[in-house]
Image 1 (cartoon, rainbow, N blue to C red):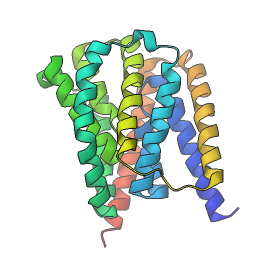
Image 2: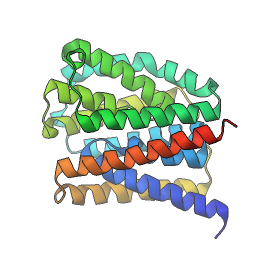
Image 3: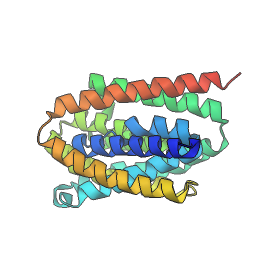
Image 4: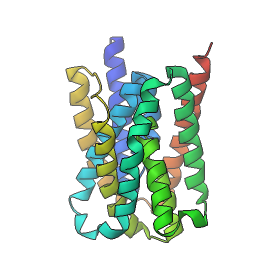
Length: 244
C-alpha cells in the first residue's frame, strides 16, 4: 500500500471515529479527530478539514432535533463567536507550523481536562457567560478546530441537561464551523480522500446513532475526553519535536 493511501486511510478512520463520538455525545469530533488531522495534513488543512467535517456532522444531527434549539439562549454565543473567528484564522495563517502544533496541543489538552473536571465558574453563567464562552470558542475553533469545550463548560455552568445540550451544541456547531470556513480556503485533498471523508462521516453518524441507545452518556464523554487528551499530548510532542 502506498504512503498516500495509508495517509488517506488513517484520515478516514479519524473522521469516522470523530463523527461517531460527536453523534454520540454532542461534542467530540474536533477533540478526537483534529489532532490526527493536523498531524496528517499540517495545521492549516488539518484544522480546516476538522471545521468542515464537524459542521457537516452537526448539521446531520440537527435534522431531527432543530425544534429543540433555544434560539434566544444561543444568540449571544453565536454573535460572540462570529466576532472572534477572524482573529483565530489570522493567527492560524501566520504562526509557524511547530508553534501552531504546540498551541493546538495545549488547547486540546487543557480543554479536555477542564471539561472532564466539569469546571464551575460564575463568569460562565448568564448572558455574560455566553459571550465569554462564544468568544473563546470562536477563536479556538478557527485557530485550532476545537470550539466545543468552551460551549460545553457554559452548558455545565448554566445547568443544561444532556437532552437540552445536544441540539443546541449541534446548532452552534453548524454556525461556528461555517464562520470558520468562510475565513479560510478549503483543504487540498485528493479525490479519493474526499470520498473517504464523505463515507466516514456517513458511517460515523450511523454508528454514533446506534451507540447512543446503548452507551451511557457519562461513559461516552469519558472515552471522548480520554482520546482527546491522548491526541492533544501527541500533537504537543510533535510541535516540540519540530522546533529543532
